[in-house]
Image (cartoon, rainbow, N blue to C red; front, side):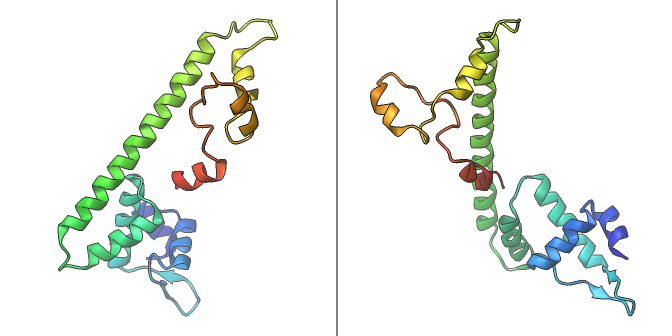
Length: 162
């Protein structure tokens, strides 16, 4: 099966299949004399496994570990269960974070007049100093309350979301 067919069958795009090969998540495909990739039935099964794991929110690193465990028929299920429960905890934390963000935005929107006035609590909140940007102002404002999600650097949020 060629890469286009493998992509259609597995639900993993051809671009991602190439990427997974590049990073070693899956082995390099067998090439035809013309240089086209060919995928076997076990390759397709692995791609579907990866797709399902991605659908459940596992990172590439976690999927790599899950693939090792999947292929190890002598492995104990305790490690797999621990990984799954750890992932569940991370998902629940992310859900709580997203719910808090939604509540904050709903609160700000509820307090915004939404008319021709220039004053807007949403803009004011976004423009307010953050904990990371204004540590000196924090000590000057004893009643300062950090807004949800602003204490995390953007790069940290990006890494955590992968």
